[in-house]
Length: 527
Image (cartoon, rainbow, N blue to C red):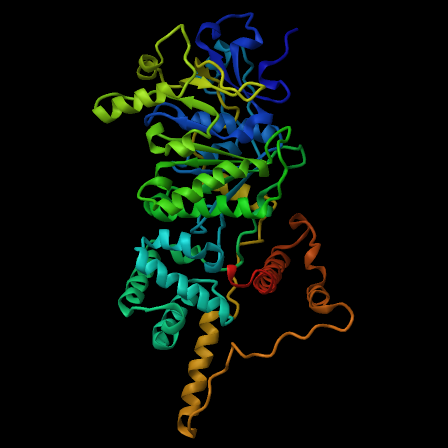
């Protein structure tokens, strides 16, 4: 009995070539596979609207999950939530499986839902400090001068112990910088009030888009969604992005932040039997549109280097022209659905897409791109040596999970039954820049009637004393105790999970501050 093409170890079945799609005795070479050891060489799924990109993405996500790889993807239309439910066996899917010589077996996958607005998934939060000035300037659409002011704000906050967690912290620190501009300009240069005002106005715009819900605590620990279920299948993390897509800059900046956090937090692992994590970047053109040169360079570097962390990045977009050449050249596994060629730009996109493939002498690649049916694609995967295979016209195999949206009741059941339920759902508001500056202002007002008095001086605060039996780090570890080895979220109640998240966030901020001081002592003015 021949091996099931859908269950070969070390491979994800993408589909079958056109010539072999209806042969009963199909051989392995007639199927198109993505080799899991090369899954971290990145990829591209392109094609016009309605040609089947989302179903192809769903098919690959299933394959990676079966292999134990964690998946992250954004659900722009609401249909990828179907990964959490078994397929419904609709006739078109069963018929496609039969045509490809496959058995259709409904299957659901271990899904974790996320949502920046905390409506259709666990809340996703990051602190202002974690986002950093470069990405925040991109998010706020600041010019170079305004970005310079933002860098000053971050530097002042860092040096004066002002913790930046949420938007009110940033706004308070901006006001502090404006109030002390004459004092600061000798060290940092001119701080124009007009630039401060422009940044404040952009913060208001961000708030109207719902961005204030993204900044705060408990901040997302990326290690929480990297894992497997009891059957060894990788978690499929789905970001609810239907509402988020109304704010495309927030969407793109958030995904880029996640990518850079993965790059900085994950250790080097080299090539693995399967990727540790695969990141699908849907609507990828939003990442590159109007991006400054410095940001494009950073994206290129992250994509080039992150594969050594065991991470594969797959860009999903309409046209290969949406992706800069420096990034496009790094995408080894390629699936091209149909493109329309109505305008000169469309025709250029078709030519560009055709030229990126290793040509097949049996057909004209450019002509084929405009002729592909829904659910059919040109496929070129990397071979065992890492070289691109000859492009083939391929019918994409049907997913095993539901193709389409799920009900609110089904979504809620998945959320409540997941491993992270209760861990991120309750927001935390610890003392940070806003509260510190508010106290300083109050102290100045109280002392105004009794003559001049100095406000609390954060710069000259006494240093943390080292403990006699091991120095500062032993003191930190003693204070934080069991936070370094926390129990599994599955064994905690929702209240315990929320408390644990608060303590972890406090520990993370404390540790980051200590690390920053150590690095500053080692590298001097480099940071």
